[in-house]
Image (cartoon, rainbow, N blue to C red; front, side, top):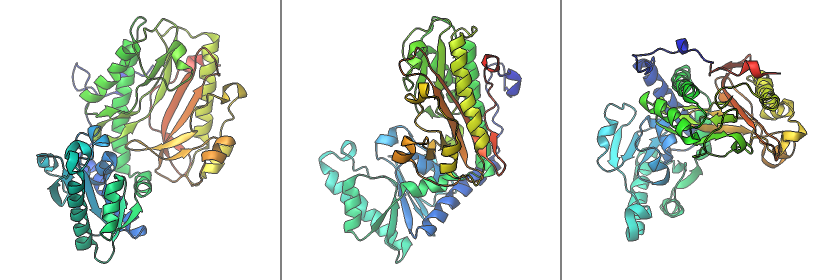
Length: 414
């Protein structure tokens, strides 16, 4: 397995030393804001109103209660193409933005959700819409095109009533986030290193008789203590719960020799995602012949598809050339062949060839400095167990650079 010599330990407690410099961090945040503004100019939008906390983090490098604000509209940003960045912050949280040179003005957020406004929703929404409209007219000049990543219907209607033309902003932000700078890649490498330490901790702690949840907690532990933030899913399963995939960790007691699979979906330091899947046996005992067969096929799918990737390849070409899933495993196939990743799972999601492409596929072109994850799930419909594997890679002109160095089960391969 991965040697601990691959990590830089701060002390005997095995906390990692963060290698990211402030210069690198500042360059990454400046680049991201420039990417957003470039998209606004290309789409002829004066500004974009952001509510998604991941988009706010990308554009302004500010964060506050990220998971809570995913479902509570309690903070938002207005980013102008050629003007200021204005941040509306949750009650008495202005101090969180101290030293953030990207933000020109801080205001207190108007929460017009039912939680925050109750029977006064209409009053608060009118106040909110008036404030946004006044700012667009002040800083946008004659351009009243406002992109919005997400908002409740009532608010959108009020903005339109006040003369603004609303543009769908979610795709704008996905396009901005698609291409990573060298500094962003450094931030991602650090998150992946933290994630790999969590994976290693799970590996070392794994014993028959512990529950799935007890094992999964170690990934959270290593992420949080090394500066990470949260984990988007709980995709860890053992034994019969590995087939079909997408079953989240439970209090099931794991038995020696069972297959164990997991998908990290970890949001680490600086808000970047490490999305890595590996599979072991409980107790790290030798696999059965069937476990080796499943693992070898999943590994072959990941390696074959990684070898295809390069800048200039279209999404359709990649899907058509991708590893052919044997009929035995097609029904339980993973939802996509590959997907983008940055601060979370991102555009694009590449559909499988055939029916999936016809129903959900869309074309595009892989570009240099896109980061993607290559996926595999191998498990027969009605089968006893399955194997989930995934690798995170950087697209280059010649192919890919693997961003995760965590080892595979090479001795299992047929």
